[in-house]
Length: 356
Image 1 (cartoon, rainbow, N blue to C red):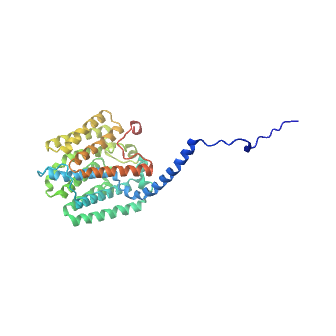
Image 2 (image 1 turned 180 degrees about the horizontal axis):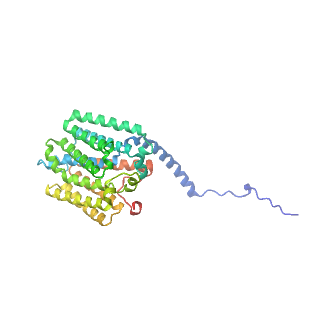
Image 3 (image 1 turned 120 degrees about the vertical axis):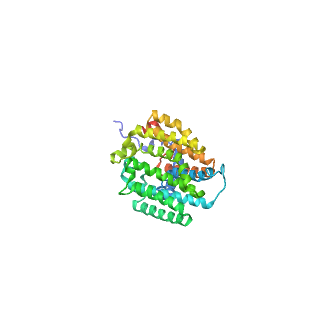
């Protein structure tokens, strides 16, 4: 007789139990996935907050706090480690932040196509927040904050109305669109920085004419960083036929301008005996020298981010509460971007291979 060729029934084969390690991984991953999904639901409404671009609050705060500190320093009152807390001043700084953030929304609304090419600022360009909704948020924010400033102090109203006009309308909207004009774009940024400095000065007291002179080293540092920010987006800007400072004057020309501006900032800071800006410029100098001889996008980004950190920390020695604000903003932004979009942002870690 022929032997049966039928295969053995699966039942006859001993079932192999799952490895204990895989069981443990499965046990751990399920609640982890559920927590991540829950976190996504919690963070999603924050999209409407992050269209204000909280990571750009740092330079807004730096210039306005520098003006606030400058009033005391240059009127003969040295202030160090001042832990006093004034709720009304806090409300004013919040209003400054909201008004400036509204101009950032307007900028995103005008740069939807460019942001898609540069693969950033996707909340509006990728319809996480509808453009119509974002526009309403921006306009209402501007209206509410300007009414508040008008009721509080006419000088602050004038300076912040100027910020909205220069940084919001002239920079982004037709027929001006200064952001697409190399020199006027830089003029616009410097004017906005000056107005923020004057706003901080006015919050502390009166006497604005003196503030114009003492703001100059901060404005040259502001110009250095503003010029450098046009370098990382050169590729996308060129594809959309934008005329930014870096595209007009080239990579090396932009870097040289930044280096010269930093040197002027340090020199004037020493002349005015202003330890905040002179120390920040001195600490930034090695970064700018390396960038000069190694003009890569990675070193440009370092020369943008670290100088802002240096000046912010210098201001924290005057007003320690400022450290709480910048630390809270930094980590809230990280929690949002890492868990909402799996982005390692904001960060001071910059890889050469990633950016060059």
